[in-house]
Image (tube, rainbow, N blue to C red; front, side, top):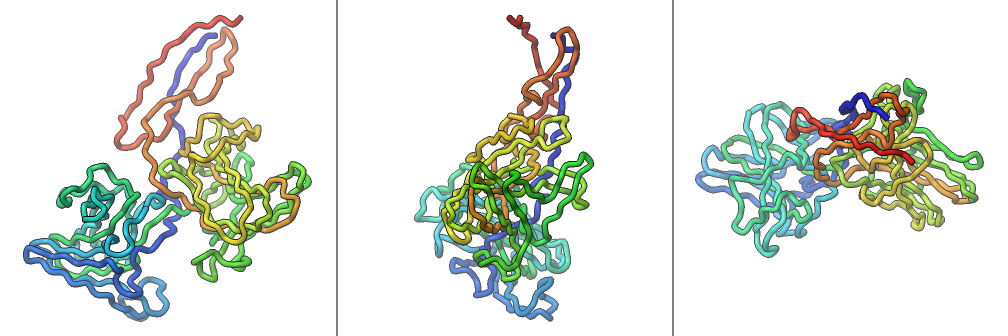
Length: 448
């Protein structure tokens, strides 16, 4: 077999995690009942700071966008043009440490005055001595360079180890996120007023079903958006509703969920739906990059039927194909519960599912996720499931850059020439070289 050319293929289509819906969130401080139990202020070297919770009416110039009724915000009056000052929440004085591994960052609302002031946001990671404040500090900067309310969103990847202050005995083991002891806003070098609200932990939200279930067809004739599948003897339909049998815990009464009604044959039957990620005009299949996360979570309403439910992740497609060759990675969920339950599924817990669609077999790459699916096996009884808030969680380590073949085999006739292509295991980032070279060699093998 002769080989005429070896070419580098770097064509993985990447959608950065930031392009996903902004976030589902968990409140750290909303100030509706005052400041958190572990609240503190600090100042020295001639600096001063005073914080106050202010109740703002919906007709007040300080009202949040779309605010209805009263809302409480935090107002800090400060003069730290010399010395140091700040405020924050010490979890050690109230709840104890928190695990933030299932979140992607922190956000808060800030009332901008255009002052140009630059503040720090600081988070306190694990301690070397749980009984004393030895928490390792990580911080980043944010600037008052706008007017009015704006949400400030800070991914954990923006934080670096603080160089202006570390307590004695602080670890130096990176941002672990598994044992968080608090947060703070150092104000050094600034004077004036800082107003903030709703400090939250964020997770990347993929689906919340508030905008319906878009569906269409791409240029190659593939269904995209939401669509159903089933064997010939089973039935399934999907819709959205704001009136499930009971609402998701903690959700507003108007919250929409996905409703799936299934009647699956009990003899090797199956049915479900797929969401093949679409563009805004629902005419292009657009994959997303999930490689920065460690798992997926969602709310599921169970019926305690004992049936087998399943979740599939549609990973990358085979290079050069125009049909649905997405590699499936799956987990089974036993319907042995009633009502809503939150599932958190690490990607490492998924198993490859072969469906005979010509999918690649190159591992769960997560750099070009084409969609996800949910369904039912062999139930033999009709029932309704509800789903809500499919969310990505965790912060994955960036894998070492590597090159591999783009396919498991290449069909080249003996004596002919052909191309063997290779590809990178992920998109290049700012820490990678601008150009990648590949060394290769041939080995002659005589078929017997």
